[in-house]
Length: 175
Image 1 (cartoon, helix red, strand yellow):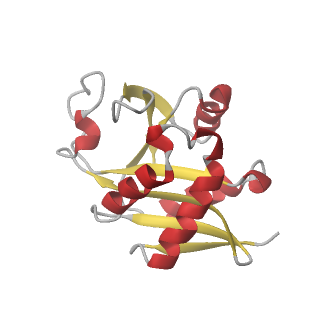
Image 2: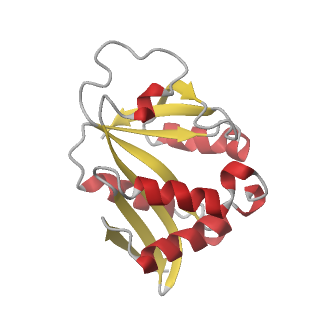
C-alpha cells in the first residue's frame, strides 16, 4: 500500500469530487442527518475553499482517493471564534491559527497511520503557530477525540456551529 498525498490550494473540479466521494463513504452512517448530508458538506466546503489560507491534502492509493484533511487560516475576527460557548482567554486569538475543518479516512485505511500522515502533511508547510479543530465528543464512542489527544491536542472550549450540528469539542495544539 503506497499512499500518495496531493496538495491543493485551489479546489479543482476533480479534487472537489474526490473529496465528496471520500466524505460520503466516511460519513455514510450519518448522512441521514441534515448537518452531515453530502450537499450540506459541499456547501460548507465551497465556502471554506474561498477563505484565507485554504489547503487540502487528499490521500490516494493508486487512483483511489482514500482520505483527506483540509483547513484554513482563522484570525481574531473570524466567526470560528465567535461561536465558542465560553469566552476565550485574553490574547487567545492574537495570532492566526490553522483551523482544520475536516479529516476523514475510508475504513480500509483506518488504523494504518494514514489519517496522521495526512494531518501532518497539512501542517508541514503552514506558518501558523497553533492548529485547532472541532470534534464530536461522541464520535467513535469518544475514540476520535482520544486519538486527537495522542496527537497533542487538548480541549479548550466547545461550540454549536449550527442548530443542526451536535455540540463539538474545540481542541488546540502547537503546530
